[in-house]
Image (tube, rainbow, N blue to C red):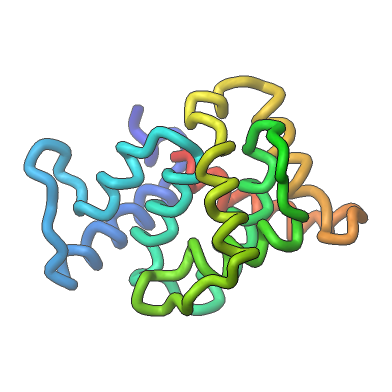
Length: 173
């Protein structure tokens, strides 16, 4: 499908820009897919958690600080609902901190995780839904519902929801 013809000209231009930036930084490209190696890691992920970590790490070097903030905020919101019910679930606040203060950061920016954060990351690794679960309506709805709410459970502003939904959509593309 031609994204530009389908009204996705902005997405197409953004993707091309990301490819150019990867080439400019000297990143290796995968011979088989033609994608930068960082993008291939995200493409090959099997669980939502593994995918979102690879996705954030692939886009981190190319994003401005404010864009990183919005991306990690959105993906932390979605990731906490794309898990199976399992005992030992950390609080939403701890899950959010584990993602934004540790897992989403490039390795050279990470501090040693606290035991609480390390437990939360292990829990997320073990309970993350497979990427294929995104095809199920109930999981897609849960993700969109999470994006529509603020941390306090109140409805988010329409502009906030649209911005977060755009980030989520970009990740799924």
